[in-house]
Image (cartoon, rainbow, N blue to C red):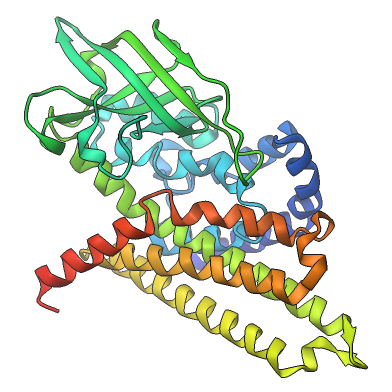
Length: 381
C-alpha cells in the first residue's frame, strides 16, 4: 500500500464527490457530444487518476489492486466513458510497461503516463483476430536497429488520442502466441495512421478506432520484454484488467440499484409507491444480492493478487460474473422504471446500452468460461 489508510480514504471521498457533483451532471452532455470536456480531463489528471497503478517513483499513486478496485467501483457510478478516458493509462496501456519494461523504458514513459501527458493504448485486436489473440497477423520484421511493423489493429480504445501504443506483433514463425512480441510504438513514428472513430451502441465519449501500421520503423530498443514474450505479457495485462473492469461493473450496478430505489420510492401505482409491491421488491432483492456477490468476489480476488497468489481463475470468474451481473441489473432497472426506463431523459436506457460492452472486452464471457473451466481442471476442482 503506497498511501496510508487516512490518505486513501481521503482519495476515495474525493473521487466519490467528484463523480456525484461533477461527472453525473455532465452525463447527458457527454452522450450528446460523444466527447469528454477538456476541463474534466484536466481535473482527472490533477487528481492523479491517470497514474493510479503506476509506482510513486515514476510519479503515480502506486495503488495496490484492492485500492485500484475500490477507486474503479467509485468511478463506475457514472457513465463508463469518464473512466475509460484514463483507464488505458491505468491498465492495459501501461501495465505491460510496468511488468516487463526496462529501467530505461520506464524512466522514459511512466512519469508522463502517470501525469496524463502521454495517453496510452493497447493494440491487440485485429480485423480477423479477436478472442483468438495468439493468432495476430500484424508482423514486425527485424531490420538492423529497427523492427518494421505492418498490419491493422481494430477497436482500439483511445486510439484517437493515444501518444503511445503497446502493440502485439508476430516476430517469429512459431505458431500461436509463441511467435508474438510486444512493442512500445510512439504515435509520431512515420507510417502510422488512425481510422475514424467507430459509431457504437453505447459508452459515448469513449472512442475506438482502427490503427494502421505501414512499414513503421520501430526502434529495436522499444521491444517490450524478450522476443516471443508478447502473448505472455498480454495475458498478464488482461489478468489485471479483468479485475479492474469487474470493479467498474460493481460500481455501475450499485448506481443503478440506488437510482431504482429512489425512483421506486417516489413512483406510485395502485395507490402506493411501487417499492411496496413485492414483485418490484423481488427485482431489487435480486439486483442487490448479485451486486454484493460481485463486490465480494472482486475485492477478495484483488487481495489474493496483492499477496502474490495465482488469480487467473478468480480474475476470469470475477469478470464473467460481474459483467453478466451488471447486464441483468440494468435490465431490471429498465423494467422497474417502466416506460421511463426506455426514455433517454432518465439515463437508465443509456446505462443499459453502456454496460453491454463489459461482456465483450477484456475477453468475452465465453472466453472467461473457457479459462475458468481450464483452470478448474488444472487445479483438480
